[in-house]
Length: 319
Image (cartoon, rainbow, N blue to C red; front, side):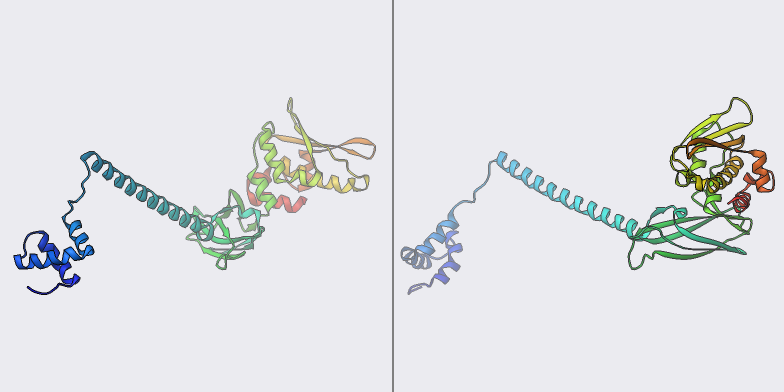
């Protein structure tokens, strides 16, 4: 080989030269080039430099660092996957599946024609839409469950649903409240008072559920209770804390008579309801007995509590 070599040719030959696989003629040409070319000489030096190896302990540490880094990455990916799964599940609940809602808190109507139950109404709360309505059936009783979600284009605020039962419909319920029974639509008052019915006036928490069903606070304001159960007839005394305007006393007593009838009907051993209140300059009492309640209702007052439809008949008579 004669003549000077280009750097490109030298770089191609350097690996073989470093391994001693080139001829003497090539070696002389390469040495001549390397003496005058620092770049190619540095390339040769780097080729001949032994590969740096870590001591066994440093190798182990380096391996553990790689494993730790890989573990952190796996943990981050797992956390991200869990977060995405939780977000997806939340989206299903809030926008598609919905959460249970008390149907009785909203405006609705229920009709039964043959074996078909029809439900229609609208939500009282803004920002909520109907996710779905479910119907279940057992022994002729159809139970309705309402599910709401954040309002979206596909979640409407009003609803119209229908369900065809497998057997004749005896009653329609929702949340433990009877909505329809024996051919009668049951009002919210009748349904709630019937659901709160209990046998003993001495059970004050149960009495309170009856009072809540009748919305006593909303009708009369704050009040206190007093029970007289030493002997029959057992008496429930409601002590009103707000004064009644003398001009409104007659209307207030009409409401008291109506509520007393429903209270005596729904509490098994209750015989008398007394209202104690201030009117004008003095304190007064208005008492309704079971006999007077029966006369007002046109039948045995206790018999109306035997069914939700019976309670509905009573509501229609006294309210």
